[in-house]
Image (tube, rainbow, N blue to C red; front, side, top):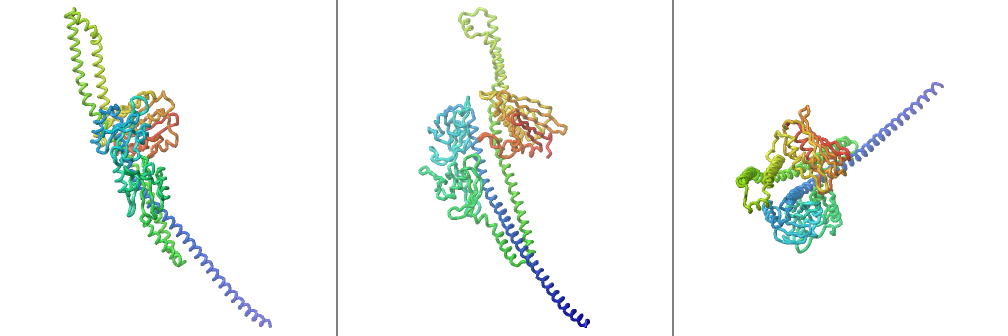
Length: 630
């Protein structure tokens, strides 16, 4: 009986065990499928999210890089116009500061300006406007320019390029470059020198500024009026003035024009004339104008088609699930690599742009210094010949006058009793005073001519136009030559006391350097020191200390310190940055110290450091190796 019960129990138990095992296996299989399905779903979602995110990131990076290229091209056109205007401004400012123009004598000024028109071959005409707004030009016209922008701003002390207008004399669109004429006394200008130049150069740059089919560029003045545009009907004529884009019927064009007039820089996607286009705009530095480049959307975004195709392929691959998961991972890695490459390219473009800006700044400053050097060398040469002639003849004149005085004394001794007529004439002329004063007069004239020759020598040494290569020069002599050039800024004026120069020169050997460029560094540092002293509230203790010495490491140290207003920590950190300046508009554009840093560090493998405390002054320390590393 027990045996039967045991067999029945085993039979039932085995069935239950088999059923339990089957249920367990089924549960296990279902669980595994659920886990696998969950993994597939999670993996698919993750891959989808990763793919979409990567697509947006890469698309954003590529689009940003492409837009930066368009904006860079726009800035290239802006820089071309700025460089051209900067040179024209320098030419007019140089003429306005010449002795001939400052005389305000039109019969003398007119032939001088006519000769400059022939020499420069850039200006249509030149004109002199007195402080009462009366103007006379080289065409012989007399006008009242009280309402002209160039007259109003130049009388306020600015050298400007005014908005292009239809000239009253030339009857054509022209740019008026003007500069104040310094007065002999006071700070208010004595008048304004104006030169009219055609706008052809601006039109040429704008015409050559394009990127792909359907793109074009235009330039607006400070009132939003087009001054250069492919559609010549938008440009004004003598009979009908041009209409400002600020009054356009297209609200998007009005918005862009408002930003351009506000001197902003950007690139954005807008709809113009029923088409979507990217508009890159940037302002000019040398005038209140702005340049814009319009490129159709399809031209800029055409490189993104490959990315869109890739996104489509990724979407198709996601549908196959887990089988193509590994491919998705690979594609993600490829996209990430491409994104990294695009980011590196964007960084390289930014670095290249910065290098280009520094190079352009150096070219502008070099051109200005070259023009100044040529002018200085020319003036020195013209002064040198008559000064040598006078100095050489003064020696003979001194001997002749002394011989005449000796002969006169001999006559007085031989004929002690002159006639009444001679006696009267002798008393009228005061012969004794003449005999005593004439040698002193000749001696003082000789001292004066020696001084002129010394100034001429300093001018020629400062310009150093014939020294393009490295040469061994005397640093102390270069500092003295620079101080000679800036002597007019150091002497006392009605508004500013004299600035004292304290020199402590060491016994320096000759230093191998670019002499002209190093003089430019000294000029920039000393001009900043003078400006800082003039801005200081202390009006009777202006002092600049210059010290040179030789280190044990065979390096020359030049320390230039002042007791001006000093610098804050923020200004001190950025003093060598490109286009950074704390000076008001028209007095500085932020190139001087950036150029000085490049000359000292890049060209001479030296160092330039600044130490300053607000209210206590500033000290620049320049270290130059005695010999070049090249």
